[in-house]
Length: 72
Image (cartoon, rainbow, N blue to C red; front, side):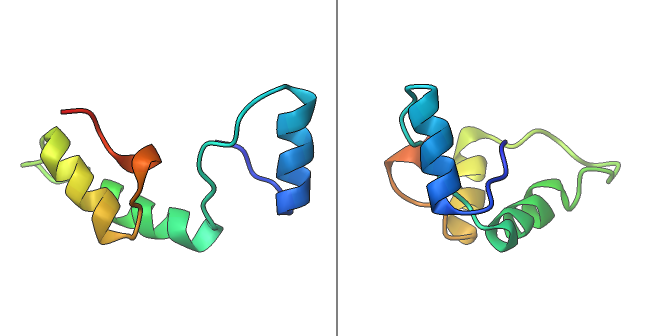
């Protein structure tokens, strides 16, 4: 994960490294994802999510589209 101060800063960084843009999240959206993703990690009954459950988490915080589509 990389943090950029603006879209222009991100684009300059990508261009300098000849990289394509993947996905960009606001800090607020990242926090939404982290709260759901790690919210029960310390529970005794915690288990790794299935790909279908992980996909549902992405969708629950508005992460949709080809970048967020898990294989399978």
